[in-house]
Image 1 (cartoon, rainbow, N blue to C red):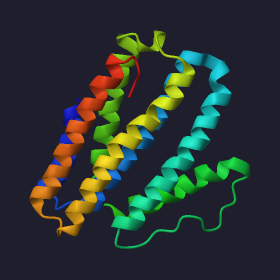
Image 2 (image 1 turned 60 degrees about the vertical axis):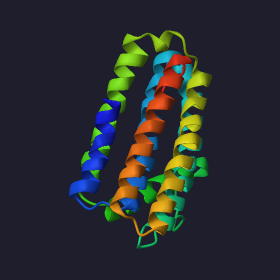
Image 3 (image 1 turned 120 degrees about the vertical axis):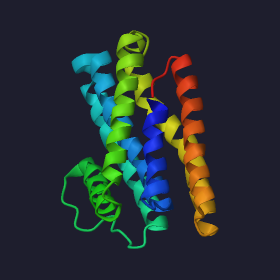
Image 4 (image 1 turned 30 degrees about the vertical axis):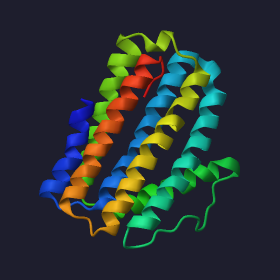
Length: 204
């Protein structure tokens, strides 16, 4: 399922003329999927006691993804996006408002089939959630604090590789071979992280 989810962007490159921006932004959007599933895991493990930790994670992780997405979109998209603008949400919830603003502007510029690829990643990680977290018993071995930290590790390692590959492909005119290499790089890094995290008792 992990490989299948990553083959949808490959189809985008081969048949729909996707560029570096569409690929890298799709891989960025995967962080949103992981974050949403992670909050579910935290509630399953901690119950009502995880409310505060989950709220903190939602705001902190949401703000992190907002800044990350803005950086990638500004670097790769033809039309610049606005980050701040007229924010109106109170207190720390402004970070979630910033994230929603970035997501809205990204979706407005990516290809229509991009949403199908996003759905493929939702299904892929949902399958991993069911098989590893619920059926394989990871929910009985993980704590809320472990779960809160897990997505950050994946973001740092995976996106350093993806962004560097994307910059290289863009600098060389985005030839097909480098776009395909970028997809292959993502699959390999994904598989390595997946195996290491589940073997170590963490969860993707």
